[in-house]
Image 1 (cartoon, rainbow, N blue to C red):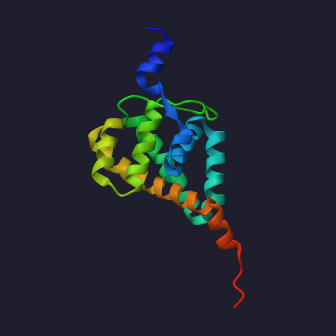
Image 2: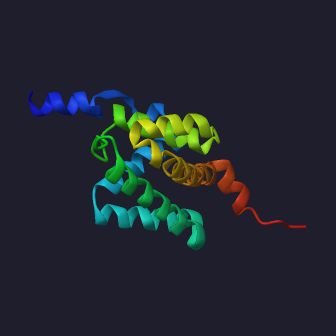
Image 3: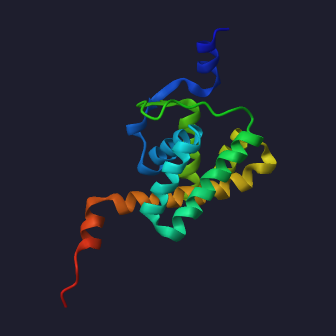
Amino acid sequence: MTGTQAHTRRGGAPVGYIDELDAVGAGAVKYLRMWSDGPEAQAIADRNFALLLGPQQGPVTTRALDQLMQICARYGRRPLMRHGQTCKCLGGDESCFATFVSTACDGDREDALLIAMNIVRADMAPQLADLAQTFGLALKRISLLSRPSARKHVAQPTLH
């Protein structure tokens, strides 16, 4: 089996495009890719969270993502395959990760646990689901704050 065949068979095969995901799913893939690129990209993600979520929630989000990635690496059934940061494609593992974070964020605990058990050992699934919920809720806050109507609402002073 060639390297390309292994890549395709093990979760890296394109299954769609990132722009087909909702904001939480797209953010999950974006930060999965960044975190996997190493310390420099992780520092950028950390700064993004601090800037977008503030000095209290930013570090909480960074820790949640870091622990999420550590558990996936240590207890994963196999390594998560990913595409490069600028790639528009969505790999199979990335799609699963996006669905997992979105499901956990929406409070669908049982479904999130089922997906988590496909990613990591069953005994680690509850912890992974908790971290995905924390991370997903932060991504949801970021998406809400990024909406043009939210920025206008926050920026307008009250006159009376």
